[in-house]
Image (cartoon, rainbow, N blue to C red; front, side, top):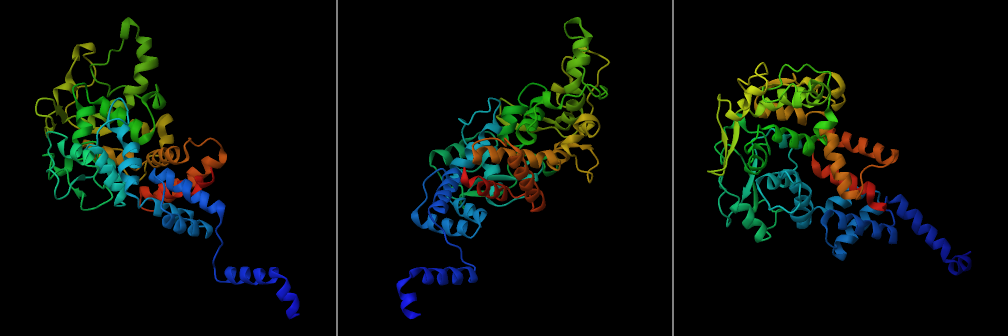
Length: 391
C-alpha cells in the first residue's frame, strides 16, 4: 500500500484537492490570470502590477470577480482616465471626450468615488472642489479644474478632490441646486442663450439615454407648449400636429423647471433669479400668441401617461413640482435613469452595447443590484466587469 502511494503522485494530488475544497479554497490558473488582466485593463486603463494581479486572480478563482474588479478600481487612473473619459461627453453639446476637466465631471467622479447615491447627480446640493494646495473654486471660471488636470492630480484622493456644496460656492441657494444640472460647466453649455430646452434635452440624452425623437408622442395635450413654437411651420399645420407637438408637449412642461436659470456670458457665471422668469422663456411670442406663457418654474410630467410610461416613473413621487431640484429627482427616480447608467457602463467596460438576450438579462440583474444597493456606481462597474471578464 505504501509503495503504491509512493509511486503514484495522483493520490497525493487528489488528497490535496480534497483538502483545498474542504477549506473553501479554489485554484487559480492561466485563465483567471488572463481575466484579471482584462478586468484591470478595462477599468484602470493601465497594466496592473504582479501583486495586484495575484490578488485579483485569487479572487476570480474563488468566484469573486466583482471583488477583483473593486481592486482594479483602487487605481488612480480609474478616476483620472476611465471615469473622466466616461463623463466628459455629458458636459458639452458636441459630446466630445476632448474637453477639459470641469466641475460637472469632477462632481460625478467624486460621487462615484465616495459611493454617493447616484440619484443625487440630478438633484443634490453637491459640488467637488480642490483640496489644499490648489486654487479656490471660482464660479466665474474653470481655472481650478484646468490646473488639476494640468498637474494630473490624484482624483482618487479625498484630500485632493473634496466634497462640498454648490450653495456654498456658486451663489445658487440650496433649494435651487440640482446636482450637475446647476454646475457652472452645465450652465455654460446648456443654459447659455436659447430657451433652456437644451439643458433638458441633453439631460435626457446623458442620464435617460433618450433623445427627444425617442420619446416622441403626438397624443399628449399641447396646452403647455410655449408661444415660440409655431403651430403652422412653413404654413403647414400638419408639420406641427405630426412632428413638433410630439416633443414639445412633454418637454416644455418639464423644462419649465429651469425658468429661473441662465448663464451670463459677461460674468461667466450661472444666474438664478428666484421668482422671476428668465426673458428667454418669453421670446418669439408672436409665433403663436395663444401659446403657453411661462409664469413660474412649476413643472408637470405629461409622460406619466401614454407611450412614455415605459420609462418607469416612480409611484412614490407626485409627477409635478417646482424647480429643477424636484424635476431632477423625478428623472433620477425613474427606472430608465438606472437602466441608462448601467447600459452606459456596460458599453464602456464590455466594449459593446448589450447585443443578445444573455447580455440583456445581465443588464437587468445589474439594474436591480444598482437600485437595491443604494445606487452606488462602483457596484455597477464591478458587476459589469465581472460579467465581461471572459470577452
